[in-house]
Image (cartoon, rainbow, N blue to C red; front, side, top):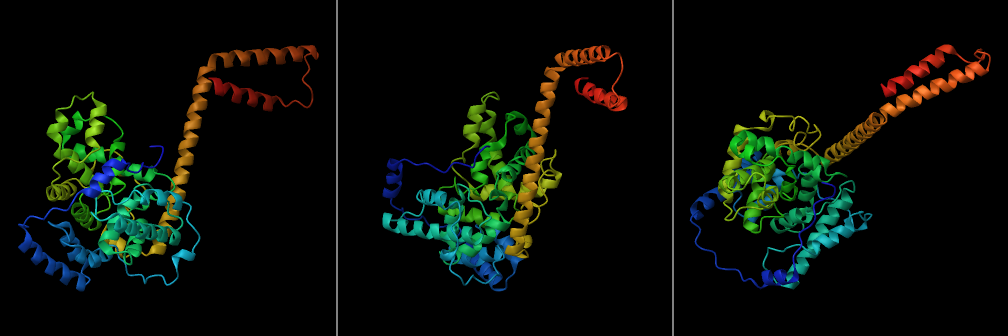
Length: 419
């Protein structure tokens, strides 16, 4: 993919329709008693700073239940132990991507919350402040379109005051691969998708067309915040992602694909465009809890190290998929250490790109040499003839400054190019 993901576009008519939609009364919750019991467990685990228990509760059914609990649990899952900076971020130099941030924030809060235009304008100001503060405090980070989708969930769950430190740690330690100068590390996540499906459902994998899995980029790079339209669903999904291995969003996308196997098997294998259209959207209805359960089972049965091929082994050891893989890794890693990992990964990425560019140029030169191979031999023969004629005209004597060995070596090197 040559450029970063394009942001969501929405016509003014559809935007107005979404604003006119009135909230409907929620039906009785059949899981109310279960959630009440779980609320007590989450509260106790957070009070005890019991990360292992919070991880399990966040990943299990119903997640962290409410935003009230997320305000404590999400910072714990992200290891937010550093004191809040005392200086004002507004006095820091502007970040190079603030123009794009302004454009994207203006398109934020499309689906939720359902509020007045005045209230939404205030939320957009808060969202802009959170994003710009994180970028100014960590200027090496590169903003990508869709980052605002992620941050708006943190803003709604944690509030404008508590969101920035959590988003900073998320950016450097959980989604660092997406905030590098190139999307190559993010695309390396996508290459895990085909072998995951191959391991979990070989027959479906054999039916899907052999195409690059770029259809999954918009969802995975935004942790599904770009495609999930209900706030309760995306907050629950973030509970699961923050409590899990960093590769889990890719496994979740695989679970979504496998959940549509009957629909996909009905598509002709040659209809690549239809596959792309179907694979790039979430199924409706969207059974989130079932997909979370299936994702956990798939990951347990087919962990990344067991996948066929080289997709997992080609992922950089500096990637979030390996360096800060679990919530426990994240909790013990400081922000300066995250910035150091960022710098090392950026250098490694640049070297890899330079090597790929050199190999590409070498292949191009080799192809040109092959194309001119025969004419090159003719040119060599003409060069030898001209030199022999020059020798003859000079009495068959080689000048004293001419080194026979050097001349022979030169001819052998030239000849080696064309043979």
